[in-house]
Length: 248
Image (spheres, rainbow, N blue to C red):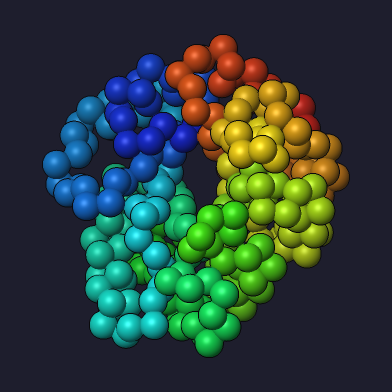
């Protein structure tokens, strides 16, 4: 198991926090011209930390709409970003599981087609696509729907524990991992409170990570600590906690 950090779109934040972690998950902002990202500095920071690179694809735009021409444009846009990620040596790319209307059952076949196509684009670029659960958000597919579509399309999952808790509490975490845990290749870990606080250090919220340990003990994928702080001591504490939960 490799444990890293989400660092947003800031190479400076990566440089300040990633030392001692196995990977950095770098976000590509919506509308970002990837050719303007300082590749040399990015490579330098990763090399100095001996860390791998993952990327998070833009999250404001949905993955699928009812309009074929828009879906074509989304794939073309993501092709450019995934080719950049592959050239940069990224191992995984996170895509939010979103749709214009996530509760429109008629749109689900189109989502499956879109997910398969984007996964193929990623594979051609040498990157593993992982689809993330964001069912607590307005455009996010519900947990079970996302799991069913990921299985149908043979797409790996980025399971965000905090997002699942915000959507459906501990029951949601348990049901998803018991039904789809074999699809999980990448984890986002943070703590949360039902009142709306999220992306907290582990131990600062309400999530029982023992549930995750029961289903994913001995996990051999990648983990990104997604705690919204630059306090390295807090980030490292969350790393130690998740390692203690998931260690073989």
